[in-house]
Structures are given as structure tokens and as C-alpha cells.
Image (cartoon, rainbow, N blue to C red; front, side, top):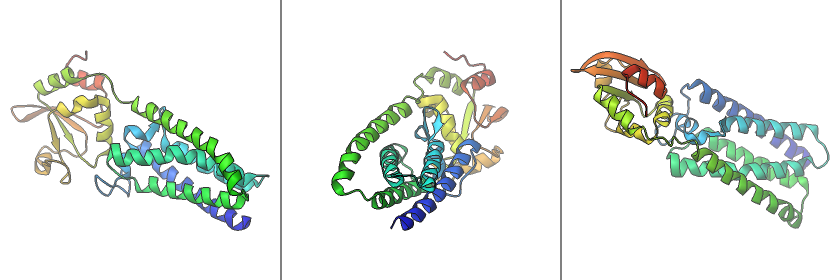
Length: 265
């Protein structure tokens, strides 16, 4: 029984390490992932949202550490290793399931690889409980305080993530950008655009913008082609319909201020 559980956990841990390594690469490189299928099913949208980090640490990095720890614990085969895995996995599952809820409720997009990692965690949880030999009473006695701790961790995660939302109102700054003829060219499939919008906060919704991807809302791909938009986000300063200058890629507020001479209050 324990041998079968051992190999199940090892394989799940290795798969989890692979998934989390890939998601970490996507997070930092801002590359397009193979699971960027649509606006509703996109690893890119999820891994670049405000819910992709906890205290500035990518969730994928934390997941990588979790699966690495699982692999270490199961390979060491110390006394009560499976019981320890049961406790660790139960604790980690609660904030992980909270993150699944954020995909459904707040982000409105599903990350296939993220959810696959949750399945791997559930398998590890079940296998470790099975191999630990704990009866139902012992599992309940151990599990309840771990479950409570996991709920607390999920709550801390929520407040840590929502606290990263830009609180400053850049509405006046955006009005200045609009008055200077700045147009924001974006794409619904652009992960860097999500980061750009996080930089500007809710005020980004007021900026003059053009959607370049056919799947986006009110798309104008022909206009983007005519303006020679090769990457998004791109900021064009236009006068009389003609380009004056442009900025490509992720921009901080200070960069946009220098680009337009608009004051940041």
C-alpha cells in the first residue's frame, strides 16, 4: 500500500514541479503560454492578474516550493512521512481552492495548468491519508486545526492580494493623456496589457483605447494594422490622426508622464 502511494505521490510531485516551473517562467517572461486559449480560458490572464502574487511572490513559485517539499518528504521516507504530507497538503489546499474561486468570481478566466495542479494536490492528499494509516477519528482530530489554519491563510492571502490594487486615482492624469491625443492600443489576449491596467488602476478604463484582437470587445484590428501596431500595449500620441510618437511595452506612470508632459498628482 505504501509503495503504491509512494510512487503516486512522487509522480504527482514531479508533474507539479514541471507545471509550476512553466507558470513561473510565463509570469516573469511575459511570454504567451500554450494554454492561452480564449479570454475565459487563459493561463496568461490568470498568471498576470493581481491574484497571481502573494506579498509580491508569484503563486507559482509558492506552488513550486510546495511540490518540491512534497518530493523531498516522500523520498526521505522518515517516520510519519505520509502523515506529515497529509497535514502539509491539507493546509496548502485551502488557499489553493480559494485561488480557484478567484478565477471564477474575480478574474473570470480559468487557468488549466493551475487547476491541474489542484488535482495533483488532491491526489497527493488522498494518497498520503491512505498510506498514513490514520483512522477517521485521528484524521479528524489532526485535520480540523490544520483546516482552520488553512482558512486563516486563505484570508491572509485575500487581503494581501486585494491590497495590491492601485488605490491612487489617476483619473486626472488619464484626462491629460486623452487631451494630448494619446491612444492606448491593447489586446484582450495580451498578458502585459493586464499588468499595464494594474499600473493605472481603475482609471485605465477612461483612457482612449483601441482593441486590436478580434476576440476582444469592439475590436478594430484593421486600425491596428494601419497604425503598424506590432506589439501591445502600445501608446500612440496622435495629432490630426497622424502619429507624433509612440511608446511600446509596459509603462510606469512616470514613463507616461515623461512621454506626455502630463503632471502626476
